[in-house]
Length: 195
Image (cartoon, rainbow, N blue to C red; front, top):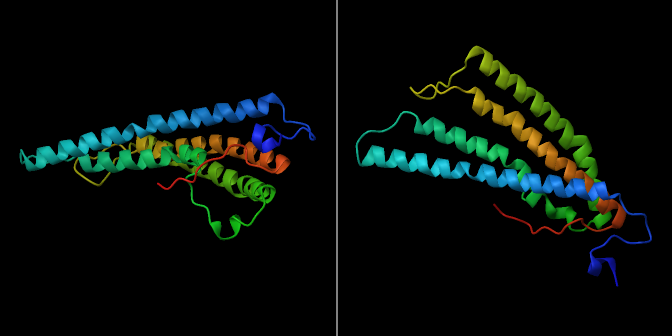
């Protein structure tokens, strides 16, 4: 029976320790859960926009806060779900050359990309985001988009939090690359998603 049929790693090479697989599964479950929680922001978004439509067109009393609240909620939701999108395989990939690569070569390209590009960029984004959110908090920055003048630091805090969640899922994806390089097959088959 082949390893593809059993779903187990080949026995001619030593396997990874159980903690390797446990780490991947825990991080994947965490990203799945956080993605579902952040999807609830969309319910809030629909509710406030419906409220605005009813208030504006049925009662002639438009709000001053819905515009800002909706773009902040949508922006935060979009950023905070990046780790979930990485877990689901929904990020953009150029397939021109990719489909011609062997599974090992795909694993090597992904691993190098995570280590050289992804993690340094996310660390930088997290550091800049923390600095921006902290500065916004300490000076009491408020939005200038409407008369509501919402405080800005909670929205800005979504940037470093999104980078952290993205990096956490990146650890799982890096481990999956190691598996792919060692055994010549993907850790877990994921359907390509189009969002």
